[in-house]
Every structure is written in structure tokens, then in C-alpha cells.
Amino acid sequence: LILRHALAFLLPILSHSTSTKSHSQSFIVYILGVLHRRLRFHALFSATATFTVWNFLLFPYVYFIAMKTPTRRRSFIKWSFSFNLCQIHLCNIMFAFANTVFCSSSSKVLFDSSDLWVAACLAWFYSLFYLLVLDRFGVHLYPIFSPRSHLIAVSGALVWGMLYITFAGWNYWINRS
Image 1 (tube, rainbow, N blue to C red):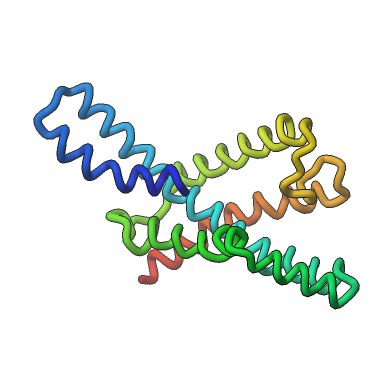
Image 2 (image 1 turned 120 degrees about the horizontal axis):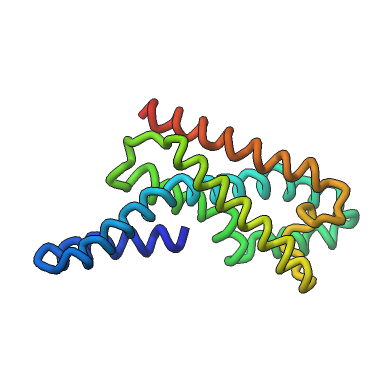
């Protein structure tokens, strides 16, 4: 999402400044434009997945099942609504929506199979990075995605299912508006 925001900011500036520049500079602007377009669905998918999984699965599970005492529940609520977690779990979906659907020049353009493949490849590469690098160093950002978790098959299937559901759902939303 950050890369897409940066490209959305830079592309108009670079496009204007390269109108009198060489073909190689125009080619770079073209490549950045393609990257900006292809990251559109992935930015929306990652924000949607984070918002959905945290707010409708993990948060209720931890609050109602894992936290046994009122003191621990209050501490969890305080931690959950800290500035950083609100940015990640609540605000990113609004930023992604604004950047990809509402304010984007391609806001009425439906996502296509290339967008789905790019998002699937990026999710696969991130999964490999998480499992082969972060997990080996003991960094467990997502315990349910740990290969030692009993929920790895379920959580993996959930991500791939969410990828397609998000693709179909946002296309429906864009087509409807």
C-alpha cells in the first residue's frame, strides 16, 4: 500500500516532467505506471484481508476466549486500540479504498485475472519470506500461519479463499457504483 501511495504521488509529477525528456525516461514512467496499476488489487486485498481477519476472527477470539480475566481483557482492549494497531487494522482499509477505488484514475476499471495473479504471486512470495526467513529467526507476526500451528492448513486455505472472494467482491462493488 505504501509503494502504491508513493507511485500515485510520483507518477503525475514524473509524467509532466518527462514530456520533453528522452525515451528512456518515458519508458521508466511507463513501467512505474504499469507497476502502479498492477499493485491496485494487491493493495486492496492486503488491507481487506487484514481488516477482515483481525476484526471478525482474531479480535473476537482473543477477547472472548483467550482472555480469561477482566484485567487481561482491559489490557487487550487498550493494546488493540493503540494508535499503531488502529492504523493497521482499521485505517488501512480506508486508505486502500481511497487509493484504489474512490480517488484513483482507474477507479471504474474492474480488476482482471492479471490483477488476481499478481496478488496471488505476491501473497505466495510473502508467505515464503515469512516461513523461510522470519520464522527461522523466531519472528512470529502471525502465530496461526506458523508451520507448527495446528491451524496452518485452515489459515492457508482461508487466505487463498479470501483472495478470490475479495477479487469478486471488489469487482462487484466497482461494477455496482
